[in-house]
Image 1 (spheres, rainbow, N blue to C red):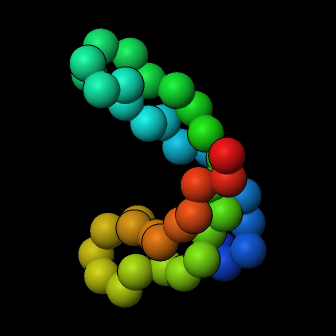
Image 2: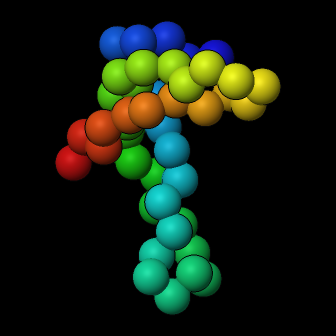
Length: 44
């Protein structure tokens, strides 16, 4: 699970849903629950 302050890579789909682009994301917080969700900010 990514921790607060880490930078992870996330896939973002193109608008046509055919392909994706990998972008860096700064992890801001973990979301409590049964899934490995987190809140992040895309670093353009």
